Length: 197
Length: 252
Ligand SMILES: [Zn+2]
Ligand SMILES: [Zn+2]
Image 1: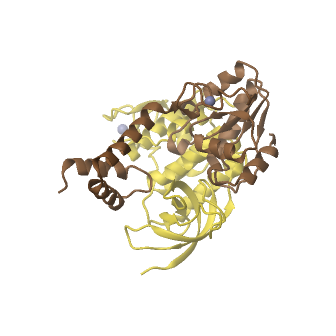
Image 2: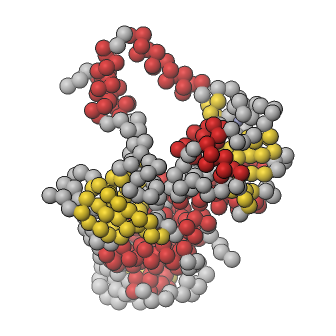
């Protein structure tokens, strides 16, 4: 039987995606052989991640400050809002270099199967943003999956009802996939080809 | 022993297994519920023409593994994605609920082709614009019947006499109707107008039910169904609150 600290770390590591018990064990025994400072640096990095990184007060992108670097940038077009499911989708669009507007990160998609409804996403805050005025167009860039589609249609109705002009990116991504894995050209084509519902 | 099997399947759930692979819960026509892995499904080029999605009808070829191991999908083609249900959250909720109920009520490796057809017809109906409320009740009632859980409607579960009078108890523990004289001990019992159980009986037998026979018939029927399903499953499925909202929402 392993000592308690070893068991605890194995347990925590197996909670990570793609890490089974064997891999966790291997990682733990690797860490045991490493200098103390290396291990502590890892634990500090994790602490910093959870303590210093939070959601942007406006768009819910991950940030270290009150406002994320995109919301804080006066050069961006703040009247154009692109709605994505996750921050990683936002970064995929940023990498394409094809977008100069700002974002709104939903932190998920509508999924009754996972118990996720509109109140579990940042939809309410998006509606508030639109009500405040100054937004010319909302571009829906949810992923082309069943849940992403359902979320887009829901947003179209909800945001349309508060008077926003809502468009959706063109279907360039294969069904079931996500922005995360799309190429730059596909992302910029999808943005350029956006249209009203 | 492993063998290749080709069948139709509705995807109930998907999980990311790794950067490129997905684990799926499929409800198949010929083999019942199947948990399987689609290796490389999220890669740009795979045997599957793109990643798997939920609530899609596929033709799949699977490699059956030993009990306890995940089956391997070797090929799949999407036949129908019921895209229309995504356009309306009430429909999407009802479709999710249908998949969830099938997942919750079934174990792997127990083929029930009737249940597969029921689920497929339900998704087709919701995509085709059938009204959500009767579609859901009818789906639930038929599912219960296929699984051998059809509630007793006409006679009392305690004294076995025909239930008469304007009101009847519904007791999940006693399997359905209980007459007023026999007042069930089941703490979740519900006292409902007779018309509520009549409507339930109609849905179970596949007859048309008049949901406007009473002003709050739908609310009563919903409460009865919810109680009964929660009793059978010993918990409330995640999709139930979404389905309830879809069924009880006033519709134009
Ligand atoms: Zn921001
Ligand atoms: Zn009785």
